[in-house]
Length: 172
Image (cartoon, rainbow, N blue to C red; front, side):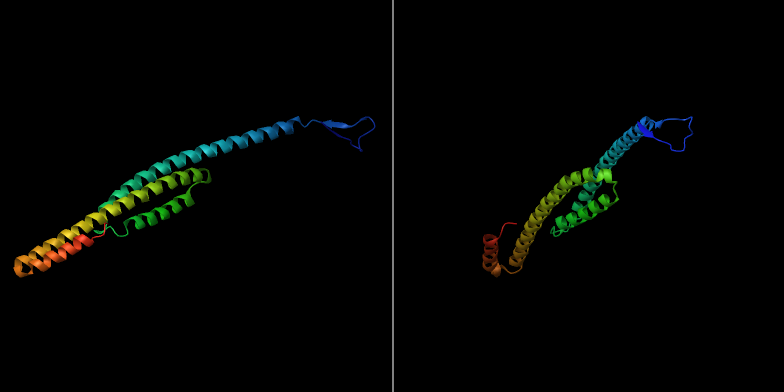
């Protein structure tokens, strides 16, 4: 309780004037509770936004990876690097536009998913390179056979060249 003394008070109104702060205290408590309620609501909205954004990103990028894998260069060159670059750009854009209450959850989920995505892309690229290299060797062998069929005198030279290629082949 706060006491205020009014010096202009008439003689009949003797004594200090008293005002209660109970109303102000209740108002402050109400404002504090309202602030907490808004913070909880903002966090819930952030969680809901993050959940939908993460699920949508995983769906979109799983499909995108399948599409990119189907359109990968025959040798596989640049596939995983391109995937990593595109993912980083996408992630930055999503985080830039996400509400503050959702950014940490999205970032955490994207870190793990992005690592998995690029890891799978790297495996796909290596598998594609192995297929390509095997195909290149098979085509080389067929060309050598065709050469011998055209000119049988080349048999010994072709066989030696093919053996040298096979024996010096570096695993992909």
